[in-house]
Length: 117
Image (cartoon, rainbow, N blue to C red; front, top):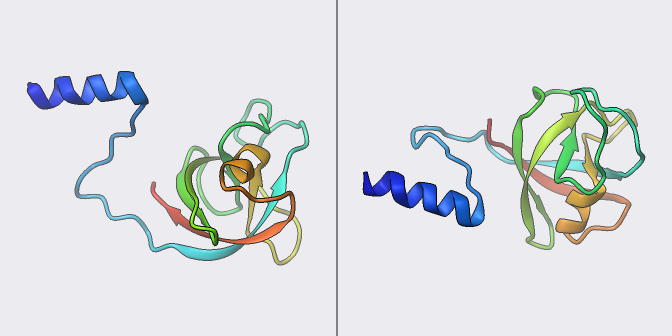
């Protein structure tokens, strides 16, 4: 009971993500990422929010979470909400909000992507 109360308290104060302790994430992959910020609809439904911590790729399911780590050591957990990129040689699109959280410019970067779901 105390564990549940502590977990609820932590979630209320700072937000949380509950992960099954037996879960093993897929190994991180170094991928070419670009940054996008245009207002548009998303493949997963809804409007694209450039300030949200989201990404787009062609292989994972909508709502998939991934830890994205830049070469500068910064890391965020982002949610897949769109399909793309559609430029040859690029593997993932980062929202402007994700890029800012990683301290990346609107350009092309190498990032590690570790799929959590």
